[in-house]
Image (cartoon, rainbow, N blue to C red; front, side, top):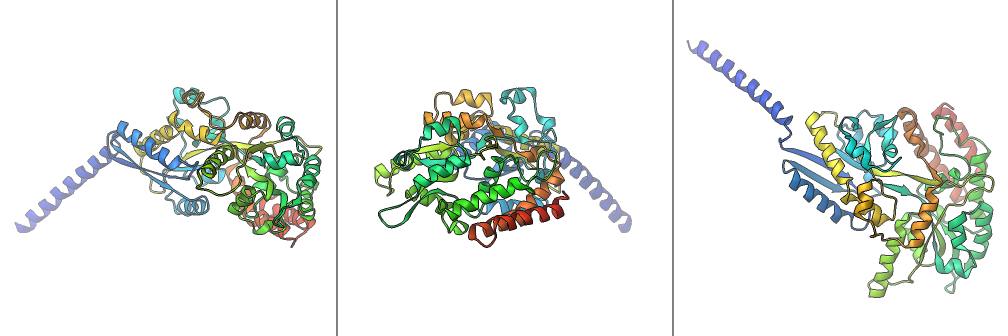
Amino acid sequence: MKKSLGLGLVLVMMLISACGNSGGKEAANSPDAKDTITVWTYPVHGTYEDELKGLVADFQKEHPNITVKTEVLSWAEGPKKFDVALNAGSPPDLYFHSVDGTYVNTGLALDLDPFMTDEIKNDYLPGTLALAQIGGKQYGLPLYQFQWGWGGNKRILEEAGIDWAAIQQNGWTWSEFEAAAAKLTKKLPDGSTQYPLVTDGTSLDFIEMLSRNNNMPDVLDESGAFQWNDDRILGTLSFIKGLLDKGYLPKETSAIAPAKRSDMFYAGQAAIISKAIPYYDVMIQNRNKEIDAGTVKGEKIDFVLLPVPHKDDAPAKTTMGAEGYIAFKQKNDKGEQHAKNTFLVLDYLSGAKAGNSSNELVLPFVRKSQAEQYAGKALGTEETIKASEIMAKNMAMPVTLKLDTAIAAKMKQFKEQVVTPNMQALYSGEKTPEAVAEDFKSKGSQMLGK
């Protein structure tokens, strides 16, 4: 009798548990169920963290069942932290970055097409949604269109007789830049050198911008054909080596970090800084105010946005694309409703109010509602805005948006393992342009199969 009673109790408990589990799954798939969405982002602009807090607070008022947890990463360490999380199968639901084929190749990037309504699609300005697509599928929503250029100190340029307004309007060639560089090189009263140009030795933006201005869209072109294996890349490397040899770039470039590069520009030790984004206009305006207030010491600077010079026989190209939030699922998938909630947050963080980021960064809006929200509130100078618009006419689309995701992953690996150390060796004088170009060619053949 006791044995029979015990068995009955076990069966009852199993039934209750089964019902409870079923109810749990149904509850989790309910639009009103409690849910948490994680967001990893960066200090997109000076006040972005406060802006993000406001956007999240407004979203949670409209969706009290959804908790949004945000984490602001550092530009230096954030990418590594994200890669570790992604490789472990537990990325955040939303991550601030440009859409990348290597992310899609993991199988964890969330296909957003099922959630894209006509209302959302029609709000995006022509061509901007494509900047967050791989193979025609939507994996993210852009927040703004990024744009890389060079930036100049107006006082130094004008003292050397450089017609910066003509350069903004018409662009300039490598030969024209070198002619200007000769005028911009001089000794300062304290004995230090005023360099025409400063870049950092740790990132690849310098070689990428210059190679695009020598008829190479990237390491690969849109078809996956290897580009950095002929006289074009050798010519680009030789141009950089020439800038070092002539003293137009600091000899210690290989050891210059991004922060040091900015310090040299602020101190008037460099006439031009690479890379510079239009946001430098706003940053330097704010710095000038701090100098006036006595909270920062230094010379006030009038910023000039400049296009990257192009090889004399090649067309001008501006490195552009889009940055925003990419949506991810986890290895232990949290279900359809969680994906819908993730998209709700994504759309809100990329909506009309979020257009402040484009406004702060002096970058083109991506949505009609953003342009309307911030009409007449531009923070950049008229000079910078016009220069940016001219540069945008020569936009070079990111090739990673067209590449097979597996090939895009190989290209990223090639840059990390081959290009980065070779560029540092070129800057330091350990390798000649010919040796670097040969290494690109041989390693590219091995790694990219081209």
